[in-house]
Image (cartoon, rainbow, N blue to C red; front, side, top):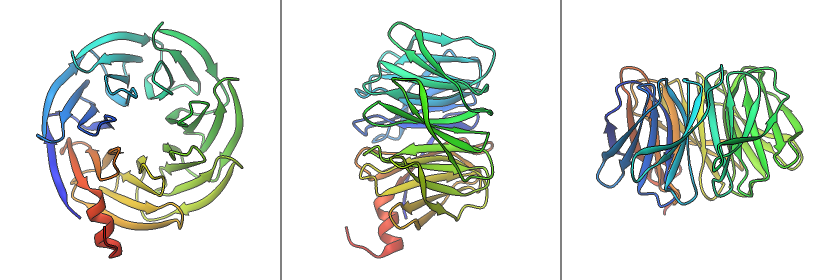
Length: 306
């Protein structure tokens, strides 16, 4: 296990982390109401994006890496030009904090959720609502979209996940099995599986084709706040309030390694497109991002050569 970098600059907890498609930069969102664009090679912030008036809770990046979309407790989404560091558009302005956002396909459309149970599909170019998805009975804390852009998976405080057909605006199935609110979800690159993380510290792997549970992953002792899947779809990295990250074998449902180094709860995690590194963001009194050698960790724990 090797910690490569610590990125300092936010003044309140880091709530969201996303890596650009070329793997060179990270975008973070914080309770300090800003986003920051980081250069991973130099280990420093390139620019700070200001404009939100509430915690930045979620960040998603377009496929070309030129734009970011953020969701904030100020009840809005913002579309950002990362090169210029400017907000291009503000969406929403409702009556509930925007908790999560995910992009669809090439990033022309997005799906978001606020503290109420509804999910909104957006046309980002026009700044208009395409449709609203209804069915959850609690806040939707996390969203993930399949790579083909056809389906979304939502994770809710009602202790369920739902698989949605985005074209029809209908729920295909409801995934039940968690016993506490679900705060994290990610989809594998082939679009056939999802990984969820709950407040009870447990994670689950789901078969989306058949809407069934494949594995329960146990190991964290507090809430799982974020989940990222590696590009090959074989592993997942989880971030927890227990101050640890864990790397999981999704086929076997087993833990491959544990990362310890944060001094506070870990709120967010992302994996670089080459699967080599994980980037995590932490909470109050630490407020940093850390970059980890993911390959080094799994080799050290399993004894497998590169």
